[in-house]
Length: 249
Length: 284
Image (tube, rainbow over all chains, first blue to last red; front, side):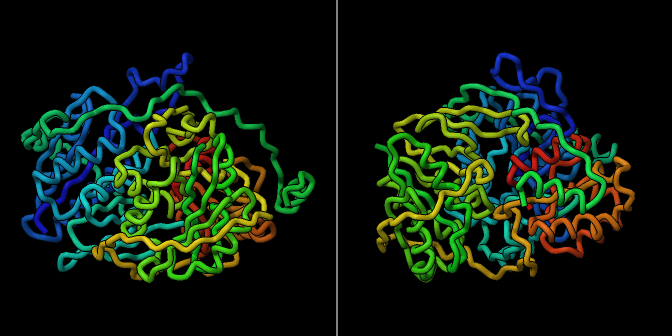
C-alpha cells in the first residue's frame, strides 16, 4: 500500500435549505455556503486512518470543478491529505465524465485504492465510483461500513438493504463509503496554516484528454409536491385506529 | 418500438417486489416490450415468479455458478453483453441496483438516470435531487441506450396474471476473479426490510418533543415504535440526529433489528428528513 486517491466534490453545504429558482432553471446557488460533500469527508477520513496505521502511504485528494474548489481541497489538505489535484472546469460534469477524469488521474498516479463518497448530496446520482471501477476494470466495493486492508486485498463490509454483506476485493480497487464507516476529524487551526503550504496542482479536462460533453439534458427543475398536513395522535392505540380508518392497515 | 430489459432482483428463492415495480415503470415507456433477466446459480423458481408478472413479454435466465451472489463486477459484463438487443435497461433503486447499474452503464459508455420517479416519454424522465428538495426533468438522446435505476417507492407493483415465455440464455462472457463474496449478516426479525416494507413507521426527536407523547426517548422506542411497527408489520425508521443526540435512544435502537436510520443530518427539520426517507433511497 503506497498511495490512496480520495475524490472530493464541492457541493452546497448540507445545512443549506435548497430553493428552486422560480423560472425552473435550477436551484439557487448564489452566495450559498459550499462544502466538501459529507460522504467524501468520510472517504478522506478512512484514507487518513489507513495512512496513519501504515508507513509511507501518500493520500492524494482529487476534485473536478470550478476554480473555487481549491477551498474544498485546502480543507482536505488541512484534514491530512498530502497533496491535491484540481481538474478545473466551469462546465457541470456528469458522473461518467467524472469517472473518466478520475481514470485519467489514476493512470498517472497508480493508486492502490480510490475512495469516494457513495453519492454526492447535490445530484444524488450514486454512480461515479461504480463507473470508475468499470472503466478502470477493477473491483468495486460500494456502501462500505468497514474496510480492512491486508496483503494486497481489502475485506469490505457493505451496507445493503437486507443488512450487511462482506466481500473481498483485490487491490487496486474502488471503495465508496457509507455514513457509518467513521466520524471525520475536525480541522485544527495549525493544520489549516500547514495546508496552505501543501502542493495543490491544477490541471484541466483537456490536459487529461477527457471531453466534457453533456449526455443528459436537464429540461427543468421544480420544487417537490407540497406535503399534506399531518395528524397528531396521542398513543399507539389511536395511531392504529387512524391507520385502520384510512384503510392503510 | 422500445425494448426494455429489467434486471430482476432475487435471493435465489423469491423475486424481490422491487422487480414488479420496475415493470410498472417500464410499462410507461410508449410502445414498449418488457423482458426480465435473472442472473443466478439456479433461477428456475424465480423465473416462474417473474413470468407471472402481468405485462412481461419474456423472461431470460442466465444461470451459472459464478452468479450465485449478486456481485456487480460479475453481473455487469453479462448485462452489458445482453443490452445489445435492448433500447432501455432498468434496474431497481435498491442497494442491488444502485451498485450494479452504473457499472453496466459505464461498460456501455452511456450515462445513467438514477432514481427515475416518473416517465414522461421514452427518453424524458423525472428524478429527485438534493434529497428530494428539487425534482429535475432530464432528457436523454434516443441514439444512446438508456440505463436507469427505478425509484421503487414511486411505482405500484405490477399485478400477477402474466404468462411470459421463459428462455435460458448462455453468454460467452469472461468474468473477473478479483471480487469474491464472503458472507452476509441480515437482521433476524419478522419485519420486512425498508425497500420491501408495505408500510413504514418512523420516529425521531420531533415526534417526542411535541409534548403529545410523554415517553422518554428510550421508552419511546420500546413502547411506541416497536408495538406500532409490529402491529402494522412495517419497517421502523428513526432519524439520525435524533439517535445521535440521545445515547439512550441509540442504545435502544441498536437493540432492535431492522431499524433504519435516515442519513439526512443536521437541522434540515423533521419534514425534510421524512421526505428524504421517502425520496432518497440511500438506506439503511
